[in-house]
Amino acid sequence: MKAVNHPGRLTKIIAYAAAGAAVLAPAACAASEAGTDGKTSIGVVLNAASNPFFLAEGKAIQEAANARGVKVSVQYANADVSAQTDKIDTFVRQRVDAIIVDAVDSDGIGPAVLRAKQAKIPVVAVDVAAAGADATVTSDNVQAGREACKYLISRLGGRGTLAIVDGSAVSAIADRMKGCKQAIAANPGITVVASQRADLTRDKSMKVAGDILTAHPDVDGFFGVNDPTAVGIALAAGQRKADVKIVGVDGARQLTDLIGRGPIIGTAGQNPRELGRSGLDLAVRLARGEKVDPGPKLIPTFLVNSDTLDDYESWG
Image (cartoon, rainbow, N blue to C red; front, side, top):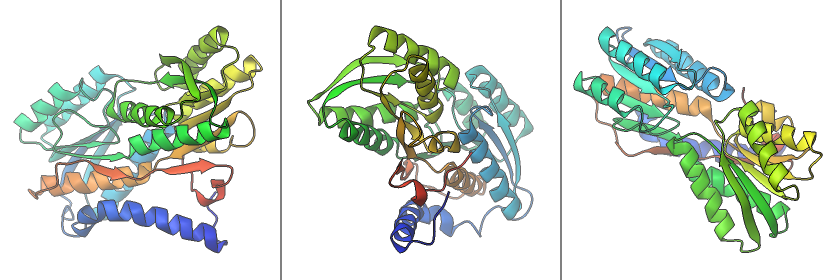
């Protein structure tokens, strides 16, 4: 879905990539200097294999590790913080050199992160924050929520009613909600009639959205905090023949293929591949005893709609 034969569009793609590269420049400079001896081992435990975002993230980590001669074990926790905790504890017993975690619960994973650090194993959080992690790389989720909701509000003409389907207790979701609320606060003609939590899956979000539509059949728009949520909302709207506009966050192909063909009008696209590559680089550098910036590294997002669809390379 990447267009390169239009000068204007190519300029946008280059600018988008350059923004991400600028954020990651310090990490990239050390890429050729660390973790190329075939001895560094990294344990990776991501959220859930049912979500194409985490699969893309894991594939990027594996590919980056292969290119650098680093041993990685990429595992998934099936959206279960207890399972994720167990996998981190197993990596600690195996004495890996570093751990990468895409947390199911940003605070709930904290005790396992602490045990890893007590064992002198550094931990890198990717995609969402993890309490106690030595380094963090995430998308700019405040930007994502703000731009998605700003676009939705503009398509509603700055007036109307919105409903929000929230998600699990991780920093990325909280930041998207923060950004969306910033956009809403700047538009006094918008009223939020419902905000309910699902679990970031299509099926649960479909049920939650259905309940909202039953209570508020005339709602004008929905913000779904990730793409599976937005797809679930669209399915619920289709069942009830509701005339709504929907935006999400992620940029997965399962959603971008639907833009312009129904109620879904846009999404804030993330780059899970860059998150994975950057997380791997940070983990290798920490494993080799290098100092890294403890502050979060933010990867810009990209507003995908019918006008920008050809400028964006989707994933999943």
